Amino acid sequence: MNLTLKIWRQLNSNTAGKFVTYQVKDVTRDISFLEMLDKLNEDLLDRGDPPVAFEHDCREGICGSCGFLINGVAHGGHRGTTVCQLSMRFFKDGDSLTLEPWRAQAFPVIRDLIVNRSAFDRIIQAGGFISAPTGSAPDANAILIPKEAADMAFDAAACIGCGACVAACPNAAAMLFTSAKLTHLNALPQGQPQRDQRTVSMVAAMKAELFGSCTNHGECEAVCPKEIPLEFIGRMNNDLLRAVTRRRREPLVIAAVVQQPSHEDAPQ
Image 1 (spheres, rainbow, N blue to C red):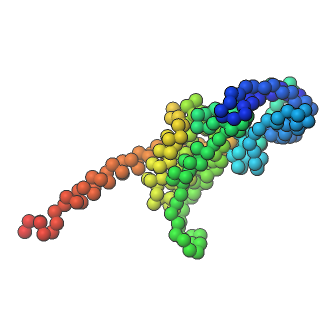
Image 2 (tube, rainbow, N blue to C red; image 1 turned 180 degrees about the vertical axis):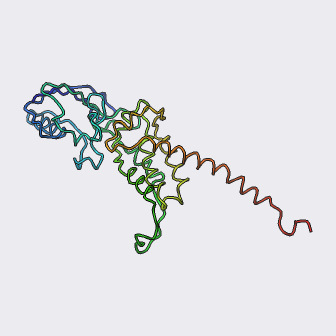
Image 3 (cartoon, rainbow, N blue to C red; image 1 turned 30 degrees about the vertical axis):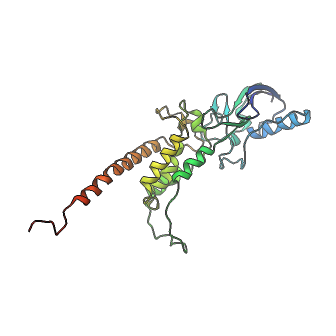
């Protein structure tokens, strides 16, 4: 089949970009979307033109590297599918497709369809850790984990940090990503010691990266290739409220302890 591709071309974040139209011919339905772009780039190189830059690594929907908008929808709009898993059998001969990078202030364009998603890394670095004693590995059954908590942590850990949730959100919010990373640790017994500090730190880092606020459109859940549920955002908000409330109460508790009369001052 033959396709018309309108692709966003931009040298770097400091230069202006524009859409450029390309024709791709004799595309077989058995290849993936990225393999179709490989074919386009081979044709461009043969003509002496610069290839289209796009990010990829595993091409198995695991790493989260690939990702851009296809006709305005992150990853192409097929439920639970990344761009690298998107088969050309989903398209028809003569289709016109518009490809553009994630559109968010926190994701500056590096080149063409590649954006800088290091803001996600800084959010994780702000609090994505747990305390663990050094030494030999503990027994697997040393800490019992309820199945419900284990299942919840496992579902949250499925997030690959591709950025589709940010690109789909009309506010460019990173709430679904941040809530998934928090739930992954906060749901487990091992994550309880730093639970409050982790929540406050990661939410503060998210705000500092200039992501927008969540207004419950639900677009993030709809395009997430790992189908991270929207309810994780509610859990994060609950954890944040708990952490802030405890922080406000701690000085009052300390002051009350300090002001308590000693045994020497107590009336006889």
